Each structure stands twice: as C-alpha cells, then as structure tokens.
Amino acid sequence: MEPCGGGGRLGELRREAAEYYRGQRVPQRVEEALNALFPLCPADFYGALANYLSTFSKAPVICKLAGRKVLDGVGKPTLEVEIYCTVKNYEKRICSAIMSSHSRIPENASPEITEGDEKERNDTVTTAVEWVNESLNTMLRDLKPTDQCEIDKMLGEYFRKKVEEKKEIQKEEEEEAAPLSSAPSAPSAPSAPSGKKKAAKPGKKTSSTERTFPPTLPPAEPIEPVLCGSLAIGGTSLAVAKAGATINRIPLYLHIALLKYNQDSPKEMTLPRPMITLLNCEKFSPAKLKLVKEVMLIPPAQLSLRQGIERVLDIQKEVMRLLEPSGKVPSPQLADSKKGKAHNTGKKAPPPAVKRVSHLGCLITGWDNLEQPLLLMQTACNNIGLELGTDIYLAINCAAHELMDYVKGKYEILTGTFKSPDEMVDMYVELINKFPSIIALVDPLRKEDRQQWNNICCALGSKCYLIAEDAATNISKLKIDQNMNVPMCSGVVLKYINQTKVSDLIEFTGLLDGQRHITILGSPDGESSDDSLVDLAVGLGARFIKLGGLSRGERVTKYNRLLAIEEELAKNRTLRSEANFEFPDFSEETQPGEKGSDIIPPPEQDSLPPQLSQPALQVHSLPAQLPDNSTLT
Image (spheres, rainbow, N blue to C red):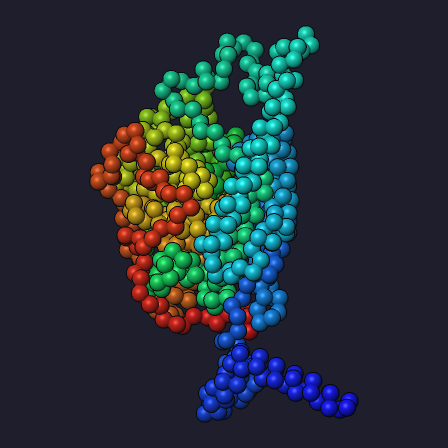
C-alpha cells in the first residue's frame, strides 16, 4: 500500500506541474525558441535561449528606494536617491540620482546667517532621507518606473499633504503663542516686537518697513519658503526617470523627449548651446564693479560643441595670460584703436585674480567699471585672431536682484554709484550699442520691475536675449500658483532643485515652446557630480544650457556628457544643425498691461501638455542605433 500511495502523490504533482507549465505556455515558448535558434546555431546556445525567453518576463517594478546624505561639489550636504527594481525575480540596483543644492544666501552674508543656512540645509537633507527611506519607499513599491507621469502625480500629492501638515503645525503654534503675547508683560519688555517686524534703528522715524520703499518702487516679493525635506520629491522623480530610461534601454535624453512628445520618437534632435562662464566678478570685494556676476561666452551656431569648447579654452588661456600680475588691463583707448600692440597704458590687474577659481568653475576677478571685463574679452580675442560678435559671443549675468538698495530705491551698480530702474534700462541700451557682441543679458532687473522689463524688451529685444533667472527659481510655484508669473522676457533659466519634478519641467518647457520663448537649463550654485541636467536639457529641447566654467569636476563632467551626446547623435545621423541666433519680436507680443506683460499664461494644476502646437523637434521615428544598456542582462 505504501508504494501505491507514493505513486499517487507523484502522479498528482506531475498533473499539477503539467497544468502550471501549460498555463504559462512553457511548451509552446520552448518549441518556438528551439525552432528560432536552430537555424542560427549560436555559439552560446544557452545564452541565446535565455535572451529569447527573457522577452516574456514581467516588466521590472520598483521594490525599494534608498536615500542617503552625500556631499555636493562645494562640500555641502545633499540627497542621493537609489532605485532598486525586481528584474527577473531578482532585486537589482538600477540607478541613482544626486540632487544639486541651491542657496539664496548672499556671498557677503554674516556668519550668523551662514550658520543658520547650514543648519537648515542639514535639516532638510536629513528629513529628505527619512521621506525616501520610509514614506516614499512604501508608496512607490510595485510601481513601474516607466510610469513617470503617474509617479510624479503621487509625489506631488504627497508633497501637498506635507505642506498642509506644516501649515497646521504653524497654525497650532501661533494659537498657543497668542495667549502668551496678549498677557501683561514685564516693564522691560514693551519694546520687544512680535518677531515679524524689525525694530527701527536709532535716529530713524520710520515706523514700518514699507515706508523705506520709495512710492514708485515695488517691494521685493517674499522668498518662497522651502519645505524641509523637499529634496526628496525632486530626487525621487529624477531617479525614476533615469530608471525608466535604463529599463527601456535608451539614453535619458531620449526618454525625456518621448515623455514630452507623447511617445513619438524625434527623427532629429538639436543640442543646447552652452553659456560658458569665463569670469566671475567679485561683487563684494573692494573693487568697484557690482553689476556683473558672470561673463559668459557663447560659441557660434556653425561650430560643433567640441569646436566651440576648444575655442573658449583658447580664449580662457589668453585671458589668464593677460591677468598675470605683470599684465595690464586694456584701456578703452587701446581697445578702440584695434592696433593689437601691447602698451602699458592700462591699470594693473589684481595680482591674486588669476590664482583663484570660483565654485562656478571660472576665474574670479574684480573690476573698477563695467567696460573693463568686456575690453579684456575683446583684447584676448584680438590677440588670438578672433572677432567678438562673429567668432564668439558674450552673455552677461547681471544678477541685478542682489544689488537693490531699498532705502534709496536704486541699484548700486558700482560702489557708491546708484541707478533707478529706468536709468538701468538706458544704461543697458547704451551698453549693447557699444558692445553689440553681447547677445544675452541674464537678470538685468529685479523681477518686480515689470514695467522696466517691458521697456528693455521693446528697446533691446531684437538685438539680444533678455533672460529671467531669479524669477524662475521655484518652478513648482510658477506652475501651480496662477498669480506667480515671470515678467516679459525672451526666456527663462530653469533649475532642477527642491520639489521640482520631471513632469514640471516637461509642462513648463511646453508652455515656453508654445509662447515662442527660449528655455535655458541652468546649473545651481551647489552643483553635484550627477550629469542628468545635460540629458534633461537635450530631451526638453532647451535652446541654451548654463553650466558654469570649464573647471571643477562636477561642472566639467556635464560638459563631457554634452560632448558624448553630440558624438552619439552624429553617429546615429540624428543630429540636426542649429540655426543662427534668432531674437523674438516683441512688437508681436501682447502690449504691456496689467495682465498681458507676463509671457506665461496660468496653466491648469497638475496637467501635462497634450501635443504641442509648435514642437522644437521634428517628430518622426528614430533609428534603432542606440547603445545597449547591459545593466539588466
């Protein structure tokens, strides 16, 4: 009886196994595989069999998120997010993304402010790591990393709940503090303010901060507070995009382009032109010049990226030679004469200038007036046989929002020299007329001076790009809040920081494309070694990319990635040559007014754009000559 019973159990198992394999279509799949592989007689038969059968495996899903605190390019703490997926029944690390840190603390901030910023940065990174390892890890488990839109919506909803929780906590704290503030206080405490108003300085009759503003000067918009932990949203969204590209075995830039253009592969792609920072002017040094934060070079469109970067390196080498302690800063008379002879008529350059490199990866210099750095560029180009405005172009990051003296209601462009917003417009008109090689001005005015933005666009919009950077720092705020729009301008610099999601960039660049305004992807001050920003810029069809200088590893890594993409597209014959610089015609734009001065209409909340009316890429099919990512094999 024992053998009979054992045989019955074995027969039952055989029947169950046969049913299971038939349900999985194993006999049919194996037969198809054997028939397909026999004519090929592969050298590694079992490897070929495994590859054939792997096409029927389940799509990878997220099984774990891992967040950790790492350091960015300037030694500040930031967030890294790793994504693990279940691939063919195994847990596998797919990719990681490191967020860049962005600080709006001025360079000359007091030690107390700097210390407070460092503590806040540590707190936000610590909280972000907790979010990733706990809530987001659970929330995104078993989701496909290729479902970028759905995951970004979940991340957005999670962030909104965190914002609401923060508001509730603040409200409770204020309610608890209200009885204490209304209670009778000691005689020594009546002069103490509630904490929201600054005490008046001795000798001034001003009773409130509003009275310090001239009647015609709009006050600065309050800085949008950054929610502690917001890095987790941006880091996770970017990591999901990288994981989706890896699983689809395509480069990240192509994955982003497919997301933006509704899964239609672009037949050709253009590359963003680099705005390469050559000089970083010391705005808070003993030197007089405060207006210029960065002097940037833009290679002409007819050059390849490699040729353009090599040309900038040649100019940089000549500038360094001119800035040696024995060198002389060119005088206006020397530059205007164009004789190319070395005369000792200029002032000596600051000896330490050439020895210092900024966190932006460029030379740090100090100047007495606005013309000096521009004349230096002109002299350096002349010395190596190049012509500004033809062989290379200039762009100036003015960062004017850092220069406003709110007591005087004017910009301090030089030490002790002030100009009103209207006078700033006149100064820029004169500058561009004198130096037509300048084709871009970044943040020439505060974002609050909307009327002056309108005026400068009408006066110079046909000659150079007027670009807003400070106004577009908080992309999520621009997208959600209908009252938050940038002033009239040629385009904006977008930065991937804090709670920014990949879907936010896709939507926002789609709006800019539809309005015929240019997009610049910008590198934050605290850049990381992650080169995803370059792929984002290429995939989104950005016109320019602003990465800083050609020094410091975290910045050179991105230039190398840009060069690699150029080689890849050229090899695949999908690289489209870029047209010459074209400036928007503001005469066709809405005339300045209460609402029409903003270039970006209020978008619907959490809505991704349908097919764009004027895509920057020709949408057809892309040849399948793409690098095979072996991460999943």
